[in-house]
Amino acid sequence: MKIDPKVIALLGFGEAGSAIARGLAAEGGWRGPTQPGDNAPRRLIAIDPALDKDARGTALGKEARRLDVAIADRYGEALGEADLVICAVQGEHALEAATSAAPLLKKGAHYLDLCTVTGKMSDEDRAPIEAAGGRYIDVAVMGGFFKSGIKAPMLVAGADVEPVVAWMNANGFDTRVLGTKPGNASSVKMLRSVLVKGIEALAVESFVTAERQGILKEVMGCLGDIDAGTFSGSLAMLVQTHIVHAHRRWEEMGLVARTLRETGVEPLMTEAIEKSHRRTVDAQIAPPDGKVPPLDEALKLLSEKVVRGL
Image 1: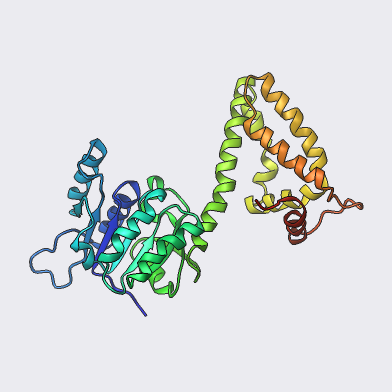
Image 2: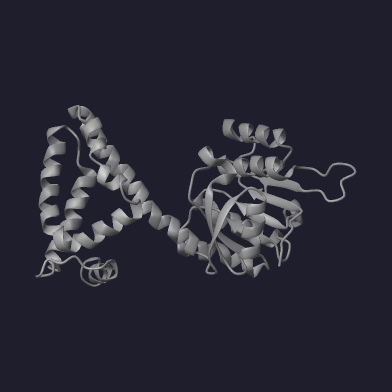
């Protein structure tokens, strides 16, 4: 079943919403009010409560008008014309947006939730949309709109999601089907962020110390072993060898913390790593034969013996 929306509503017209509007305008001629003589108008409308409220709101209003996007500062009847709704508000406002939009939605309209939310929050967003007869689609944006615009990679999950993904890819997006369960895409993004944002914080701590010591180039150069392989493969290897080498690595992180303190850097991340490794040491799961287990066995051990629930 193909989808062929004629009206798209953007909830939120900040960096994400405006980038999507620019992409749709460039890729498919999407615009705002219907033009005289149009047989099959492709219209864009937007809703952003910040419209004209402050300097940012004034700027987004100017951008909407430049793109010929009909924009309002509240949820109104015009939303009921949309065949496809793209919600791109901040995560903490996602449920409010879904609850406000739901009563106004056209029956059967697809609601694409691009907000940064947890899997549970995605379920909460989905409830009012589906109760109102809408079709909720979970979309995780895996890149930055500032850099990539509408081409920011996205994972999409939901029931009967293939036609939505096909339409998105045909209209300038870069999307991939993740599965049929809404919330999974959001969870993948959250767990990716554990790695990416964690490495970001570690890089700040390490590189600031290296720069102060005048060895930044050398520190960056010593990462060649990781550069030689894949990132995901390197992470898997670290998890596997963690079972065997946690004790040695825990002791090393104690010295790393001392190194940072000697340079005047507070070892926030380093101390957390030291604590995490000590947790594994205390669990006494190191194999007597010193053999590194396969990834699935390593994760089973860590899940059952080390990483406890709340």
